[in-house]
Structures are given as structure tokens and as C-alpha cells.
Length: 279
Image: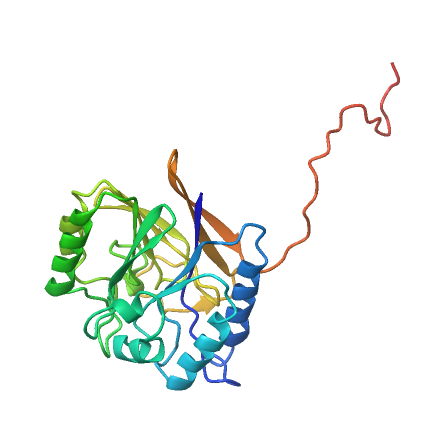
């Protein structure tokens, strides 16, 4: 079995600062890392699907390095719209995948157990929407054609319309081109995304797209076009992508916060309750 943890949208701030004045994202990111380390079956790798930082600040990248250094398994990063490819590349130049990436864009492949990770870079400097571009899409087409190994594609911006209008306006602008590249390849088992701060599952190009919730704050679920973007503190969570040769990829939601339990499923068989009539 191969197990990959996916965390996303950390939005780290310089030490002592909160995000949007109320979200203690630094503490929440550390809590997520601790939750992963507490798993009985530790993942083979952790994939962070963008927005490590909130403002692409070198101090935020330094804090990200400090927090992620606690993880004992390989960590693979891609930039989101709050990061930049240049900033992340400079701060994590020694990280697997990033150190093999050529040019300013951070796209690469990595073999993790029985699966292949294909990491894409959808960052557009100074803009909230995402775009891959023809050079990266050509590379992706060539890369997917090189091997039929079970593949997980990671990209920050989701390539589907989520139904949340203000987020769909800043989605992946060349999603149709991505679909043309991915559709012929049956070995692509999952498209792993972030960006929207909600757990979302959708079909894309004949594949399954799983969009992970944030390990910090979540987006308020609202389908109206005139609704302002707001966030709340619904339970923070992350995904565990489990791959076995027999079944393929199964995605589980794991919550960051601890809850009461575990409790055994005791049977009531043989138990006499008040009011029961003895036989």
C-alpha cells in the first residue's frame, strides 16, 4: 500500500501575525503536521497543493520550512496563487521535485511507492486565477505518455466549475486544454487540487478530481452570484490518498482536530433494559 497525505492552503504569516486578523494559520498548520505525525500508519509522502504563504513573504517561507521540517517523510510542494513560483523555488530549492524543476515554473514528477506524482504549477504572478500555459501542457503530454504507472496529478487551481461563483471566476483559465491532454491517459487516477478551502469531488476529463479542504479556515458555502467571499472555522481537514494495485486510488478525509473516542461498537445482545419483561 502507498499512502500520500495532501494538505493545502496553509496561508502562513510572519510569526506573531494572524491571517485576515482572526485566523491563527501558523498554529493551525503546526496542528495539521502534528496530526499527520500521529497517524498509526504514517504516509509515504506529503503533498502540499499550494498557498503555503499568504503574501509570498520570505518570513512566511522560513516559517513553512520550520514547520514542514518536522515531517519525517518526503514533502512535495507546488505554488498557489498566494505564493509565487520564484519565491517558493528560492525558499525550497533543496526540496525533492523543486530541485529537479527546470526554469522558474515548478513542475516535476516523483515516484512515491506504487504511484507517480505529476506536480503542476498554475501560478500567475500577481493574479488570483491559475494558468498552466502551452510549454507546461506540452511537457505534461510528453510526461504522461512516457509511462502507464498509476499517476496522481497535483495542481492548485481546480480545473472544474465548482458552482461557487466568486471562486470559479479565479479558477484554472486553460482547463479545457488540460482536459485534452489528460483525457487519453487512463492511468491518471486522481487530480489533486486546493484553492477553494472546501472538500469537493467532481469529474474532469473522465477522471476524478478531489479538492481538499484547508488545514486552516474554510470558505463559506454559497452559490449566489452576488455573495461576498467569506470564511469560517468549519473543521479543518486533509486528504489521505491510499493506493493499492488491486483497488487503485481511494481518497479518505482525515480531520485535524481531535474528537472524543474511539469507542467500541458494543452489541446490545443479552443486555436487559429497564422495563423489559423477563422471559
